[in-house]
Length: 304
Ligand code: GLN
Image (cartoon, rainbow, N blue to C red; front, side, top):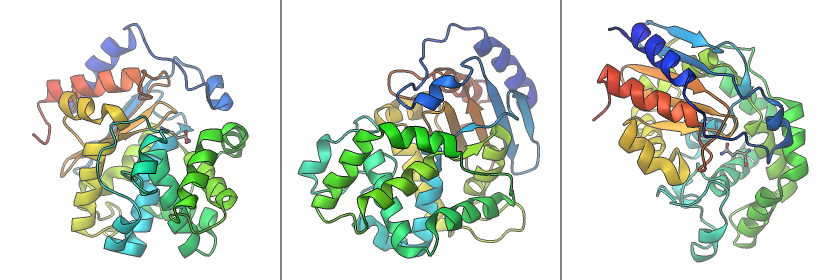
């Protein structure tokens, strides 16, 4: 069977299973999404692209955007970035505060909220118009000007983002936030509000399967070494305290978001995006995880 047939078969199977997950209602606007949405899109290096279900409906990519903000900051600071944020899996929830005290305000990795807030601070310090410049960076990667923020989602999260506000202020008390917490948080909530559909997402992330170079015009978005490291971080930290489980079951670098999206990368082969809004207890898409587990099992393609 080819990828298309495998995806079709697994899609039908996973679509009909009981979804044990729940919507991320802590962001009020995310609770308004139809939980039955389910889309998949694969973009491959040799242009064998295929999508199914709600793969053309936009959704809130939430923490998946943290990979893109990290890439942008990595381009600016290169190795110096690791003075501000670590590269270890945290083993804690995405919004946890517990390790920061012992770690003197240096977040364990850039994908937990604490780490992504520090990356937001770095971008604010280095960009003229952070909100606009970041959006342009994201659009330029896949040459897609349709990508945008959702003001509705950002506003909804700003009203209830008390844990993130606490995280940012706590990190600032250790000196690892240089700007005003309110500015850093505004930018963080905006970047989490980016909307894309599965096709846009898998097209955009294909550069990480292509050693950091754009698939459109071959321009270098990241160096080979940087691209390797972003993939390594997605492998070890992309799913918070479920990163080991994702690695064990799926065997690919990936990143999830509380909007129910997951992106996974097979270096040299493809990027695949799955969207199903109901989340398991660790905050990762229930059906998305199940789908990808079956996909790498059936296709017998994984990096291991
Ligand atoms: N904006 C969300 C938050 O900060 C992102 C979390 C996620 O997608 N895991 O809580």
